[in-house]
Image (cartoon, rainbow, N blue to C red):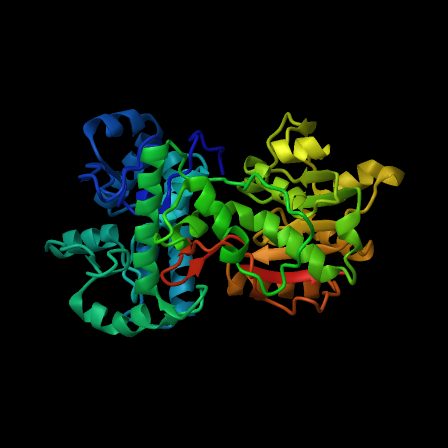
Length: 475
């Protein structure tokens, strides 16, 4: 895919046409929205936002409009062949059909554009609302209606969450049980897809309001500025126990105000630091690692490079380990922003007073290439971590990395967005003959995964959370 020129990746509601799509706005359902007259896919809160966004949106917009009006386009028939004749609640079948439709639609767009889609364009077509039980989109319904000489009424949203759709009342009747059944992609109780959607909308409304009042960005990255008096085990603890008091102080939250929206907001980024500390505790037989002068962490950077863009959160590792004086982190992978090599970073006042340091090293090499270049100077880290199914990116180069990690017996933790990806990661590593560490079991929920579930991309049903599952561990 081409590099994306957007500075900020559009949030879920903007990709779903329920928030302004302009990359400096993203106003949600509190603002009046008008659909783009070309693609009818995205929405804007004003003509000004649409005009400002046109340079970025116009090429894909024109192609989407062309696909709808030119029924003879090669490959269009494939999309209709992938629609089941009867509504189905078979989640795996729905997932497979949706993925196949998106792949076919992507191929059509790229053929007409004569270039690959960039990441924003790809996620936009993948997020297109569909009927929960037959996968029809608004566009496919309009094409069907035009072919039959009728008028499409469009998808019907759930009246409670407004984020799940069906193409007819009959299909809503077939979808009701699935939409309201308990969903495992949650924390703290059996919530349905509908309930999680309602929670998601409330959370995004909360974060948007906070951004306008306090001037924060769309994704809040926060690290409490305090250093623990001593190392305390994370076993049996919770997000609220570890961060509730600090959030109340920092944001001046009233005692009667619920803390859960704040915890969901900050857990997205903090989950990376907390997962590292949790992994170190679980993979070490004693607490000697908590008293090291320097702790070294190697990170297999994922596609979106959140590990680099939100690297401030790793200072939380120093905050929880008062005996550690230096945190050295090495970020490896093709997605690492080029041009940065090694840097000594500032720390919070308490860390600075203690003489603590953060040393970050960056390389665009795959991990096995980095180890080979280091040669005899390579020192195994205290932990290597791959967040959110890094195993899928860059195969087969990553195969060499995983074999190296196994052969050198480097302590490693892998996380995944959901159970399915965690189980796939386990299966792939086992196919390589890698021996998995029994500590975490296989594909279990990560107690320090994000508290902020989002609808699974390119799926009709299910959610994902950043580092939501502990896929497996090595050594």
